[in-house]
Image: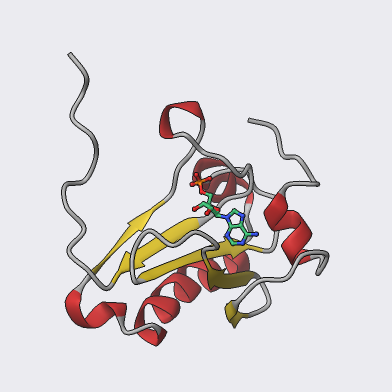
Length: 122
Ligand code: AMP
């Protein structure tokens, strides 16, 4: 998947589209998902132009990697999701139905989240 500089999260980062911000630091931004699937549903994105987790982990600087990793944990704590538990999810590519081609980690919490993934279809 190629990086599209006009993807919706790139536009949020440029301030062209609003978001309900939760956290921001030098290298990461977190905001509430526009279509929440749970009481807690946040998205954490790096500020750099990375399509997916594998892209980010291969190319990001140590400072980006550190800030992004810390941001995910901080947002989980800030939203209280650490109290009863939460799930991190990052869809990468076609098999995972990634919609937005800018790395994002979903943080889900606030309810029991069920099984990890769909059973394979027969
Ligand atoms: P994915 O399928 O993993 O690429 O997830 C993309 C997520 O982005 C979905 O959960 C959408 O609801 C969410 N989303 C799309 N547009 C926005 C937006 N403008 N603000 C916040 N979340 C968004």
